[in-house]
Length: 129
Image (cartoon, rainbow, N blue to C red):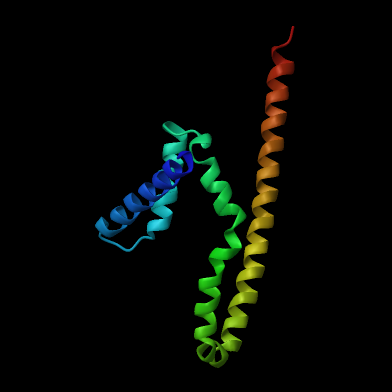
């Protein structure tokens, strides 16, 4: 029964996200809205234990959910073959750009953390008698 309540909770959040997406005057993915709603609920009302079994099940079976997408891609194989070079260029450029942005973000966060630690140490040492 506990699992059914968790499934109902996750589906209710998804339904609210779909409704919010339909009500917006501009296109916005309902899945993103649903994730934001779930985050807000987890920060305020819900505890992780309320949805742990359901989310563990979904994570363990995540590869199963990629099958429809793979079949859909194979259904459009002719279109992919016609546009193979532009798609490869886009994939390579976007991958390299993602790597670069991630690397610089990590470096910036490390720098900020070191600066924060040094200020905290200065405060502690300066306040000591």
